[in-house]
Amino acid sequence: MASKFKNTHRVVRRSTREPADPAEQKTPRQRILETAIRLFYEQGSRAVGIDEVIAQSGVAKMSLYRNFRSKDELIGACLDARDQTYWYWWDKIVGQYPDDPRRQLREILRAIAERTCEPEYHGCFFLNTALDYAQADHPGRLAAIRHKKTLAARLLKLCTQLGAPDPETLTRRLVLLINGAQVTAGMLGKKTQLELVAAGEILIDRELGSKA
Image 1 (tube, rainbow, N blue to C red):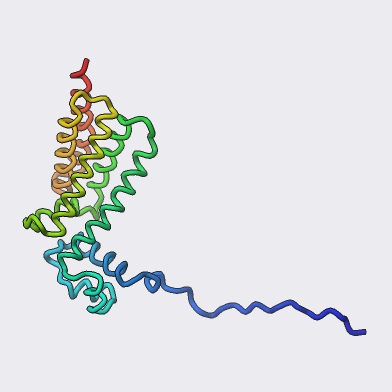
Image 2 (image 1 turned 135 degrees about the vertical axis):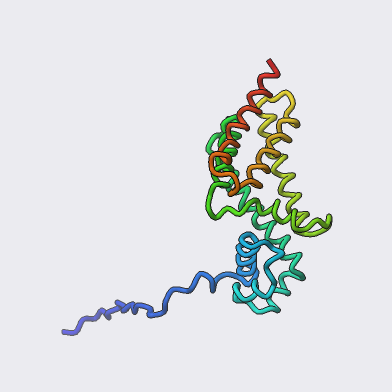
C-alpha cells in the first residue's frame, strides 16, 4: 500500500563555484587606498606615479578620479586611513592596563620601539610625507600634522593622569623621543631603538621626582 506521505526531503547540491575572491568584494575606493598606502609607504609617495597605483589596484582610471580628484588628495586620504588604524593599535595597547597611566606610557614606548625594529618598517608614514611635501596646505602634510597633534594630545592626557607637575613639558619631550626613534629606524641598530623605553622612563622619573 502506497504511503500517503510524500517524501519532502530535498537533495542539496554542492555548489561547484569557487568562493569569491576577497578582492572582488572590495569597493574600488578600498582597493585604491590599500594599494596606494602600500606603495606610498614602501617607496615614498613622490616616487610612485598614479598610473602604478591604477595598475596594481586593478581599477579603471576613471574609478580612481571619481574617488580622488588628484594624487595629492589620494595621499591625504591614505594618511587619514592609516591614522585610524594607528589609533586602533594604540587603544589595544593602553586598553590592557586600565587606570595605570605609568604602565600605559611604558607599554606604548615599548611597542613603538619594537615596531621601529621590524624589517618592514620604513619610518613614520606621517613624518615621511611631511618631509616630502613642505607646502602648508598640502593634504598629506595637513594629515601628518593632525596625526602628530593627536599624538601629543593623547600623551598629554596620560602625563596628566600620571600626576606630572608639568605635563605639557613632559609631553613635548616624549613626542621628540618618539619622533627621533621613528626617524632613526634602520640606521643605528635595534639596541639604539630600544633605548626609547629607558629614555622615556628617565624623563618620567625626573618629572615625577620634581614634585617631591
